[in-house]
Amino acid sequence: MGLKQNLHNLKKKYEGTKIAPLFNGFHTFLYMPNETTHGGTHIKSADDLKRTMNTVIMALIPCLIFGMFNAGYQHNLQIEAVSNATGFFSGEFWNMDNLLIGLVKILPLVIVSYVVGLAIEFIFCIIKGHEIEEGYLVTGMLVPLIVPVDLPLWMLAVAVAFGVVIGKEVFGGTGMNILNPALTIRAFLFFAYPTWMSGDKVWVEGAVEAAGTADAISGETILGSLAQSQPLNYSVSDMFFGFIPGSVGETSTLLILLGALFLIFTKIGSWRIMLSAVIGALVMGFIFNQVVDMGWIGETSKFYGLMSLDFWKHLLIGGFAFGAVYMATDPVTASQTNKGKWIYGFLIGFVSIMIRVFNPAYPEGVMLAILLMNVFAPTIDHYVVQGNVKRRLKRLKAKTA
Image 1 (spheres, rainbow, N blue to C red):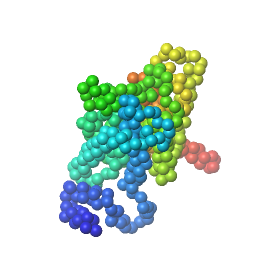
Image 2 (cartoon, rainbow, N blue to C red):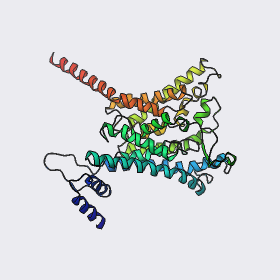
Image 3 (cartoon, rainbow, N blue to C red):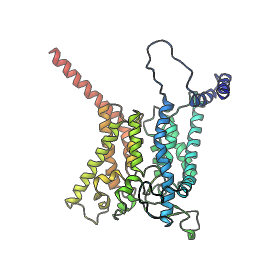
Image 4 (cartoon, one colour):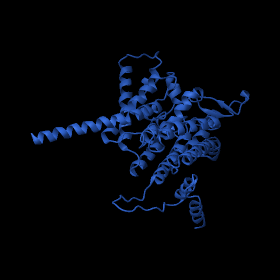
């Protein structure tokens, strides 16, 4: 009661000033809003935007924790301090040494992401005189999960500032942006600092002492090796469970799948978008397999490695599963109509695999595919709505004829 009363007193004291939204934001973050509506009919719900965002964060936490263990495991695996994991419950993977190594590298990414992003949100709410928006609660967690573990913190801070301001605030804030803010941040990093975002190397701390640096680079990711037509050296179970190198949150397809089921159960994530994205990826992968089987692409081609990969294995590697579940389903930037969601998701999956294969310099396409479809989502919905209007007009004319 003391904290709540103090916040309430501060809110009343500064009511009408530009910093009032700050106190109101802290108050509503900790406690339910005490405002009630009057007059008219309203839909009553125990949910609000903060609780929705917190639900998505709950779905991301398992990926974050697993990513910490995996970052340490990949480090120890590269320096041969551990053997290959034998299963999801392997003691070689779930040990405190792996967790501590991952925690030291990943926790600063989370802190910088939230501190910089929320600071900018606070500044804009004071300047523009509106309430604090909760949209960055999820974005702040997504960003550390989709960047390389060795990304410099200053680089992340610059990218977050760009993504929040250019990707969201210039459009009017939460609910008005046309591009996914987290992917806007990653796109900025990719184009501004491509050598850090190539996606074809594995971070290993202190693996090469002769290099004279704290961080050394060793080993390739699956997409990096396949883009160079090298054989796939990981089992299906390793790829499914997540014992593979990659960005922090994207490796474990199992945990991403569980997160997807949680989001669908809570009615926050669209199952139509998720399913259609998977179908689109499978179709594009199958087409590439047929091209290879027909002999149109030989083993000497730079596209052979990813084209010849079994079409369904595209779902287990890279960031496709993570993007399809947590980013393509963003309710602000995705299609809103049911038919539009099927088209939107299918094209994301289809284009993702196409970019992955035809862009060996950056063998990952889900980021660019989602951003591209974010731009076309309103157009898709427009034509879906217009199609429905035309069909209803035809039925009306048929009845009145």
